[in-house]
Amino acid sequence: MTGPADLDSASSTPLHPAAREVLLAALERGWADPRRLHRAGRDARLLLDNAREATADALGVRPDEVTFTPSGTHAVHLGLLGLLRGSRRGDGVVHAAVEHSAVRHAVAWGGRTVEVGVERDGRVRADDLVRGATAPGTGVAALQTANHEVGTLQDLDGLDLPDDVPLFTDACASMGRLPLPAGWTAAAGSAHKWGGPAGVGVLLVRKRARWRNPFPDDDRVDERSTGFENVPAVLAAAAALQAVVAERDEVGARQHGLVDVVRRRVAAEVPDVEVLGDPVRRLPHLVTFSCLYVDGEALVTELDRRGFGVASGSACTASTLTPSAVLEAMGVLTHGNVRLSLQRDATRADVDALCDALPEVVAGIRARVGL
Image (tube, rainbow, N blue to C red; front, side, top):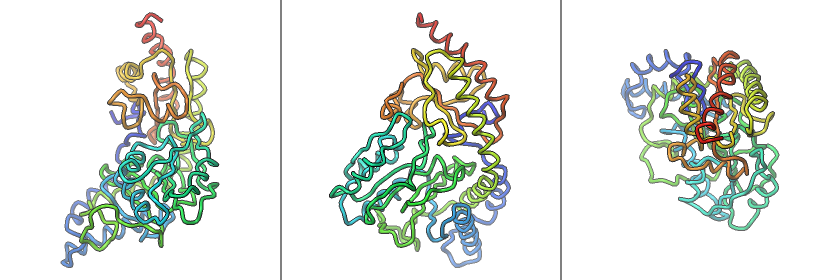
């Protein structure tokens, strides 16, 4: 399902039209090793350099601060652990309790965790984060730009961190859709979330940052290299990113209005429901709500039967049927939740159709268990 009824773009989104033609053309020219000196290698290197420059321009960074990785998860691991290895203060990582599992697993693998609580809307308690960053032994602070499950934006610009504590930000949920905030030392993004091909991540590391490769060395020129780049894919990812950035004011405003419709109608028309996340300072395309006495998997299944593709549970652990760590940290209802994330061509008719179907679906599930 890749049409308007697909309301799960936060997990992945179809290839952006701007990337499709670029990908096909690059397959003919970008197959060679970009570090070889023969003609095919030079062609591939030119495409790789073009992709790096286009990505840097779209994100407002330097080309030599951009590294392409095999996935957003790999970019998170490489960026965070590289800052930790380069730190002189210690192996502690202070981070929000609502970070993506990729961040939390990286910290557990490579350092010592200092977890900071959040408010009920998902926003980190900034004073606690700064206090944890100033504590002896804390080497890195980590704070996402926006929450991947409820959409709440974090205030990176307002953090008063010590000069010798770098800030890592997981920007996978927001990169391309919103401008990057200030204040970060390293950032990670994932191309398939903005309409690029799957299998392309973006790692940004500020010039002169104390970053050291945490993994086995590669014999390639780029110190942050992760092996043989998929040149056609990274070029298509860059083309999609440029297109998304160019259209984000119009698309973002339209999606923000559509999400407002969902938030308003769900709260008014579905009994015993909690709409989650900050209602204003949030990602433009995403909304999550939880329904009391309803199983999330049953909700997903019933909505899918009616032609609506949505997500439930943790963004990366829904298949395990375990409660969402994000929702638990927020202190909100963890079961019976639905996450909608609009595709770029979603319309008012699409969200109204979902909202029309939802009360009956929820009532039917509750009735089956005697409620």
